[in-house]
Image 1 (cartoon, rainbow, N blue to C red):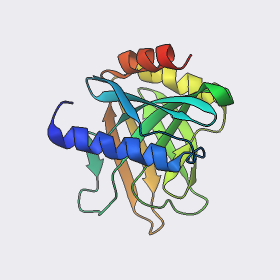
Image 2: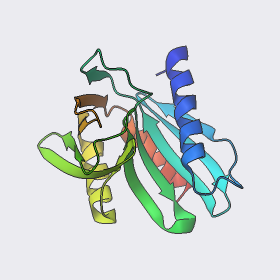
Image 3: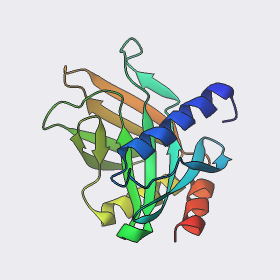
Length: 173
Protein backbone atom coordinates (compact mmCIF):
# COMPACT_ATOMS: atom_id res chain seq x y z
CA UNK A 1 0.00 0.00 0.00
CA UNK A 2 2.95 2.28 -0.26
CA UNK A 3 2.76 3.11 -3.94
CA UNK A 4 2.43 6.76 -4.86
CA UNK A 5 -0.85 6.09 -6.69
CA UNK A 6 -2.31 4.44 -3.58
CA UNK A 7 -1.21 7.29 -1.33
CA UNK A 8 -2.76 9.83 -3.70
CA UNK A 9 -5.97 7.83 -3.82
CA UNK A 10 -6.13 7.49 -0.04
CA UNK A 11 -5.56 11.21 0.27
CA UNK A 12 -8.55 11.69 -2.03
CA UNK A 13 -10.54 9.39 0.28
CA UNK A 14 -9.47 11.42 3.28
CA UNK A 15 -10.57 14.59 1.58
CA UNK A 16 -13.87 12.96 0.53
CA UNK A 17 -14.57 11.95 4.13
CA UNK A 18 -13.66 15.47 5.20
CA UNK A 19 -16.00 17.04 2.63
CA UNK A 20 -18.84 14.63 3.44
CA UNK A 21 -18.54 15.39 7.14
CA UNK A 22 -21.54 17.16 8.66
CA UNK A 23 -19.03 19.02 10.82
CA UNK A 24 -17.31 20.76 7.91
CA UNK A 25 -17.31 24.18 9.53
CA UNK A 26 -14.74 23.16 12.16
CA UNK A 27 -13.17 20.07 10.65
CA UNK A 28 -9.44 19.91 10.09
CA UNK A 29 -7.69 18.22 7.21
CA UNK A 30 -7.45 14.47 7.94
CA UNK A 31 -4.13 13.24 9.32
CA UNK A 32 -2.72 9.83 8.41
CA UNK A 33 -2.37 7.62 11.51
CA UNK A 34 -0.75 4.77 9.64
CA UNK A 35 -0.85 2.35 6.73
CA UNK A 36 -1.62 -1.30 7.44
CA UNK A 37 -1.13 -3.47 4.34
CA UNK A 38 -4.23 -2.69 2.21
CA UNK A 39 -5.86 -0.25 4.67
CA UNK A 40 -4.97 3.20 6.01
CA UNK A 41 -6.16 4.92 9.20
CA UNK A 42 -6.94 8.65 9.45
CA UNK A 43 -8.20 11.11 12.03
CA UNK A 44 -9.43 14.70 12.13
CA UNK A 45 -11.15 16.99 14.62
CA UNK A 46 -14.67 18.26 14.04
CA UNK A 47 -16.86 20.55 16.11
CA UNK A 48 -18.45 17.40 17.56
CA UNK A 49 -15.10 15.87 18.53
CA UNK A 50 -12.47 13.62 17.09
CA UNK A 51 -13.29 11.44 14.07
CA UNK A 52 -11.27 8.37 13.08
CA UNK A 53 -11.70 6.11 10.09
CA UNK A 54 -10.02 3.43 8.04
CA UNK A 55 -10.19 3.30 4.27
CA UNK A 56 -9.27 1.02 1.39
CA UNK A 57 -9.81 0.76 -2.34
CA UNK A 58 -10.84 -2.35 -4.27
CA UNK A 59 -8.20 -4.66 -5.69
CA UNK A 60 -10.52 -5.49 -8.58
CA UNK A 61 -13.72 -4.05 -10.07
CA UNK A 62 -16.11 -5.36 -12.71
CA UNK A 63 -17.07 -4.44 -15.32
CA UNK A 64 -13.72 -2.93 -16.25
CA UNK A 65 -14.99 -0.63 -19.00
CA UNK A 66 -17.33 1.43 -16.79
CA UNK A 67 -16.29 4.98 -15.94
CA UNK A 68 -16.53 5.65 -12.19
CA UNK A 69 -15.23 8.13 -9.68
CA UNK A 70 -12.83 6.77 -7.02
CA UNK A 71 -14.25 3.83 -5.03
CA UNK A 72 -13.72 3.36 -1.27
CA UNK A 73 -14.69 1.22 1.71
CA UNK A 74 -14.65 2.97 5.09
CA UNK A 75 -15.21 2.23 8.76
CA UNK A 76 -15.70 5.31 10.93
CA UNK A 77 -15.68 6.13 14.65
CA UNK A 78 -17.26 9.40 15.85
CA UNK A 79 -17.16 9.04 19.65
CA UNK A 80 -18.60 12.54 20.21
CA UNK A 81 -21.75 11.34 18.43
CA UNK A 82 -21.61 7.85 19.97
CA UNK A 83 -20.88 6.30 16.55
CA UNK A 84 -18.52 3.32 16.51
CA UNK A 85 -17.77 0.95 13.60
CA UNK A 86 -19.95 2.73 11.02
CA UNK A 87 -19.45 0.77 7.79
CA UNK A 88 -19.90 2.59 4.48
CA UNK A 89 -18.83 2.54 0.87
CA UNK A 90 -18.46 5.22 -1.76
CA UNK A 91 -19.15 3.40 -5.01
CA UNK A 92 -18.05 5.94 -7.62
CA UNK A 93 -21.46 6.50 -9.24
CA UNK A 94 -25.01 7.26 -8.07
CA UNK A 95 -26.84 4.11 -7.09
CA UNK A 96 -30.14 3.23 -8.73
CA UNK A 97 -32.85 4.95 -6.70
CA UNK A 98 -34.40 2.56 -4.18
CA UNK A 99 -31.76 -0.11 -4.74
CA UNK A 100 -29.68 -1.89 -2.15
CA UNK A 101 -26.06 -2.98 -2.24
CA UNK A 102 -24.64 -6.17 -0.80
CA UNK A 103 -21.40 -6.83 1.05
CA UNK A 104 -20.16 -10.43 1.18
CA UNK A 105 -17.38 -11.72 3.42
CA UNK A 106 -16.85 -15.47 3.28
CA UNK A 107 -20.30 -17.00 3.78
CA UNK A 108 -21.86 -13.86 5.31
CA UNK A 109 -23.81 -11.32 3.27
CA UNK A 110 -24.90 -7.90 4.55
CA UNK A 111 -27.53 -5.75 2.82
CA UNK A 112 -26.78 -2.03 2.63
CA UNK A 113 -29.17 0.83 1.94
CA UNK A 114 -28.06 3.34 -0.69
CA UNK A 115 -28.22 7.09 -1.10
CA UNK A 116 -26.44 8.98 -3.86
CA UNK A 117 -23.05 7.31 -4.31
CA UNK A 118 -22.90 5.85 -0.79
CA UNK A 119 -24.19 2.74 0.99
CA UNK A 120 -24.48 1.91 4.71
CA UNK A 121 -25.77 -0.83 6.97
CA UNK A 122 -29.01 -0.01 8.77
CA UNK A 123 -28.03 -0.67 12.39
CA UNK A 124 -25.14 -0.42 14.84
CA UNK A 125 -25.44 -4.15 15.53
CA UNK A 126 -24.99 -4.99 11.83
CA UNK A 127 -22.04 -2.56 11.62
CA UNK A 128 -20.27 -4.36 14.48
CA UNK A 129 -21.16 -7.77 13.02
CA UNK A 130 -19.70 -6.81 9.66
CA UNK A 131 -16.54 -5.34 11.21
CA UNK A 132 -16.01 -8.61 13.10
CA UNK A 133 -16.52 -10.59 9.87
CA UNK A 134 -14.02 -8.30 8.12
CA UNK A 135 -11.43 -8.98 10.83
CA UNK A 136 -11.85 -12.74 10.30
CA UNK A 137 -12.17 -12.61 6.51
CA UNK A 138 -9.83 -12.61 3.56
CA UNK A 139 -11.75 -10.44 1.14
CA UNK A 140 -14.91 -8.37 0.87
CA UNK A 141 -17.12 -8.14 -2.22
CA UNK A 142 -19.49 -5.19 -2.72
CA UNK A 143 -22.18 -5.43 -5.41
CA UNK A 144 -24.43 -2.58 -6.46
CA UNK A 145 -26.46 -1.22 -9.35
CA UNK A 146 -25.86 2.18 -10.88
CA UNK A 147 -28.63 4.62 -11.76
CA UNK A 148 -28.13 3.44 -15.36
CA UNK A 149 -28.69 -0.19 -14.37
CA UNK A 150 -25.07 -1.35 -14.56
CA UNK A 151 -24.31 -4.03 -11.96
CA UNK A 152 -20.82 -3.57 -10.52
CA UNK A 153 -18.70 -5.76 -8.29
CA UNK A 154 -15.80 -4.45 -6.21
CA UNK A 155 -13.41 -6.84 -4.44
CA UNK A 156 -11.42 -5.56 -1.45
CA UNK A 157 -8.55 -7.23 0.36
CA UNK A 158 -9.03 -7.41 4.12
CA UNK A 159 -5.29 -7.65 4.81
CA UNK A 160 -4.46 -5.07 7.45
CA UNK A 161 -8.04 -4.28 8.47
CA UNK A 162 -7.54 -5.64 12.02
CA UNK A 163 -4.40 -3.56 12.62
CA UNK A 164 -6.03 -0.44 11.13
CA UNK A 165 -9.12 -0.97 13.31
CA UNK A 166 -6.85 -1.35 16.34
CA UNK A 167 -5.34 2.05 15.58
CA UNK A 168 -8.67 3.90 15.34
CA UNK A 169 -10.01 1.98 18.37
CA UNK A 170 -7.03 3.40 20.27
CA UNK A 171 -7.38 6.94 18.87
CA UNK A 172 -11.19 7.20 19.07
CA UNK A 173 -12.35 4.84 21.86
